[in-house]
Image 1 (cartoon, each protein chain N blue to C red):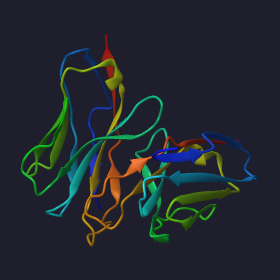
Image 2 (image 1 turned 135 degrees about the horizontal axis):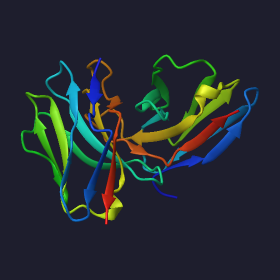
Image 3 (image 1 turned 90 degrees about the vertical axis):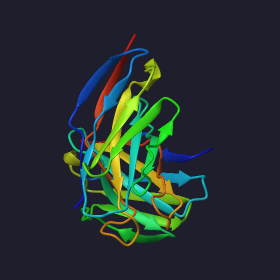
Length: 114
Length: 118
């Protein structure tokens, strides 16, 4: 595997379910990001981790819970979601700490909340 | 807060012709970074080109070039010799430097859907 991978690619869940999205980067980067891409809105930054510490939250509802166990892996735990949370969730990584580091994106997880 | 505006929701161009996508942004910083990303129908977001604000020379990458007008806060993308594979959503993005408000965070525009026609 190369670059940034995400699993699953598609997920359908009910509002009472608990699920997790997984992201893995194979680029040796130190920073990882979660973005939400909805049909009618620009990409929204949800969470940023740099060297495994969260540095940005962006007022995301608590039903989204990120986890970064090491610099290569990032999870987004989901529970009691709402239909409006249906979106494409993108993970990205960057070298971290530098100036204007390019972010490299994964293919995304298409989430549908019923 | 930074804002990025892409005023053209959709554009089309004939294969082999040239098209320009517009982007404007708002910031009080003097040094920052600008990006164009491409998102084809397969959904993988790919970096097209990157510009550092302190560099006056416009960035180029093969058929892709930018027209960076710092005073006007404008950052347009020109695609020359358009190919069918250029069909995608194109996103303009802005990044403040580390230490600034939301430093190192990308702010995206709403995107422009480009269709290249045979």
